[in-house]
Length: 172
Image (cartoon, rainbow, N blue to C red):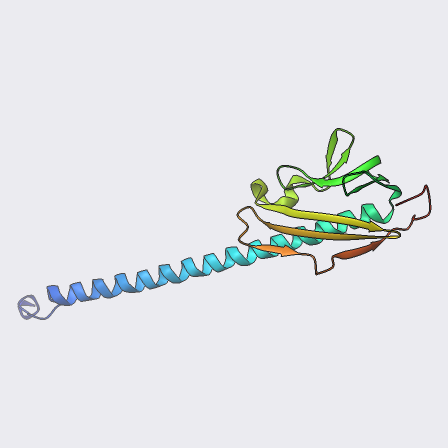
């Protein structure tokens, strides 16, 4: 037993410091790798959410315009129509928050719920252009994150929706 107590074997201070430095470097590498992975994950989720909002918005607009009646020019390079969802003299536009709204007179009604635009409105519709050439509507949308870093848009030429009531009540 005395032999064990008097033994000189063990770790020196330099060896201990080297081991600590190596562990710190490994920890830094692990932390950097995790930060890169989280950054990539957030970017992929944001791109997915932007594309989902674009798809949802195009579907909602298409569903409303497909059954439009009484399409008429409104004098501002746009048109109004009678919507099954919103009523007569409906015009689709963007509000100040980058959300699609149906304007009926002085009233604004959201086409999609606020939840569709992400947590705290993280995603916005940056551009909306809808044109009408009887019997088809052409929808062009651009959706992006608030800072515009990630975006998605309809294909060149937009998405064409055939109006099922082109001859009823006149039209453009």
